[in-house]
Every structure is written in structure tokens, then in C-alpha cells.
Length: 230
Ligand SMILES: C[S@@+](CC[C@H](N)C(=O)[O-])C[C@H]1O[C@@H](n2cnc3c(N)ncnc32)[C@H](O)[C@@H]1O
Image (cartoon, rainbow, N blue to C red; front, side, top):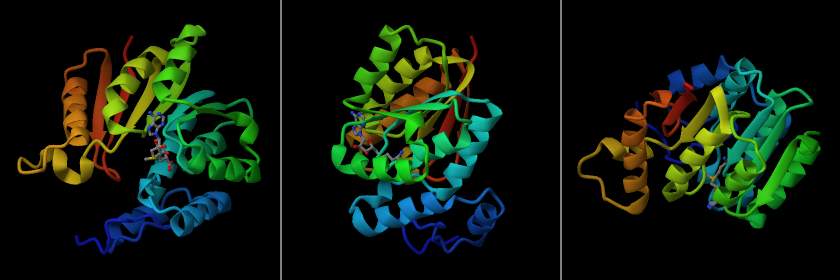
């Protein structure tokens, strides 16, 4: 099926793809604030292609609720959609550790979180995610997190994966975004550059990783879910 555009970030994904739109229409709908955040980002932020996609939001909401999650980590915040999605999915005791290096992007996130009334649930840490994750480990929080979403710099993914595996509880889920790299992972003629090398290596490592049960889903740009076995 043909895509009209590779930058599919609208309130509803703008694929010329009736099946995808049908699936989105028959999933939980975004809240008004989520829609507003997406619209704002599209209209004001040049790299709006980085936004989490609509079909991922309802999927993560369901996962977080199935897990009865109370502690989550969002690695890569941008304008705040994935953190907002996690915060909205949890009860009032739910917490998100939100990791990013950019105050330019996250200044907008802070406004939307406040507008949605969930800012008290989200602890934004502006520093490299590896530092924040290591600090959580040093504070004794190993094996206590229910859900982690990895969606920051691709060459850092392996580090985030290893640190997240320490922080996640048995049965918790780590969701790893962009694991298909727009199909380039499976294209032998793709230009080999650092992000592709990093993602291919991590995909192969996770496949062989006996610590986790894993599944790679061709949703959005590919999401791998892993759950810690022990
Ligand atoms: C793809 S965007 C995240 C999208 C976000 N999950 C959403 O829902 O829209 C990637 C983000 O990772 C951040 N980032 C890049 N390097 C980072 C690092 N070393 N530590 C933490 N965040 C980083 C960028 O500033 C950017 O906001």
C-alpha cells in the first residue's frame, strides 16, 4: 500500500492506508491534549518527525494498564507525547521518569503536562539518559520499574537497554522504538551509518538474549517488546 508521505505525524496518521486508519479509528482515541500537543509540534517544531505515532499511544496505554504500572521511564521525551501517554494511562500514584537532554524541546512538554493535569506524575531529568538511569540504579531502584520506553539517540540504545534491564522488574516490559529503521535493517543495500549499525547490532543481541522474552512488531517504525524472565 502506498504512503502519501514519510512524515506521518498528524492527529491521525496521514497514510494513504485505509487499514492503518481503520485500526487507529478502532483503538482508544487520543485525548484532546494529546491531539493539541501533536498539532503544536507539527506546526512549530522542525523535527516533528520524531513524534511518537498515534497507534503507539493506544498500544502503550494498553500495555501500561495490563502491567498495572506505577513506575515507568521514558527515554527520549521531545515535546512530551510518550511521557504524557504514560502518565495518562496510570492512576494518580503512577510516576514517569522522563529523560532528555534538550530544554528547547521539553519546555513545550512541561506546558502540555501541566495542561493535562499530570505534571505532578512526571519527573523530567535534563541530562544524558545513561546518567539518569545509572542514578536510579545507585539509589537502589533495580527491579522496581514496570515499563520503559526507549526512544532517544540510537547509538545509545544498547546502554539504555542494559541499564533498563537492571531497573525493570521481572515481568516488566521494555519497548524499544525504531527497530526497523524504515526498513533499512533488512535491506542489504542500505547505506551503512552509525544508527543503522547500532540498531542492527541491538536487534541481533536481543534475539540471542536469554534474559528476556522478545517480540518485534512492525508497528510504526518497528517496536521490540521484551519482558525480563528472572
Ligand atoms: C525521537 S525523540 C523522542 C520522541 C518522544 N518519545 C515522543 O513521544 O515524541 C528523541 C529525543 O531524544 C533526546 N535525546 C537525544 N540524545 C539523548 C540522550 N543522550 N539522553 C536523553 N535524551 C536524548 C532528544 O533530545 C529528543 O528529544
